[in-house]
Length: 205
Image (cartoon, one colour):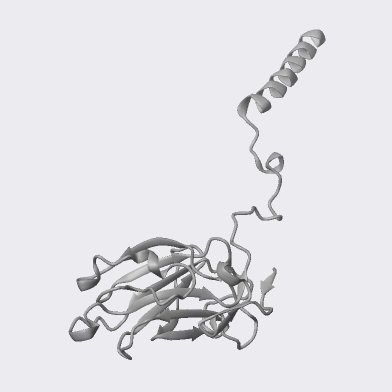
């Protein structure tokens, strides 16, 4: 597995070895709540540019890396960064990662620019490709300046590898060794054997 950890481009003070492709590419699903309902969710995609979208109280978004994947570094360095652009220390988000978008692993909470060393998280496997990230507004604030909840700018994989694929395992047997023979394939030789046996029996009589 090729893990990209060498020097690359720097965004908002953080170095990303894979450049622009280090950031989330696709919105899988989202729920914007309260005063944030009309927000432009696409603002969370791509590099951190201070153009954010508010999630609203307990709002959420599921993102996907398509031209890369988040993975472990194998050491104590940070692997994932989440950019929350709000100014309030109370605008906290809960962060999860997933291989398939169904089974989630909680990696922690964050506020403003937050870093995560996924190697240290229970359930995370070295060498696995985590294509999905879920962000959930954690505090549910809906009063005053925090009515629209956490303001999300970008999500980036500091430790990046090639995108996940659906390649078949090399350990699988060829189809010809695993298929069950169809009935005609079995029946025809059996009928031939039975016919020969019948002819042989008549000759003996």
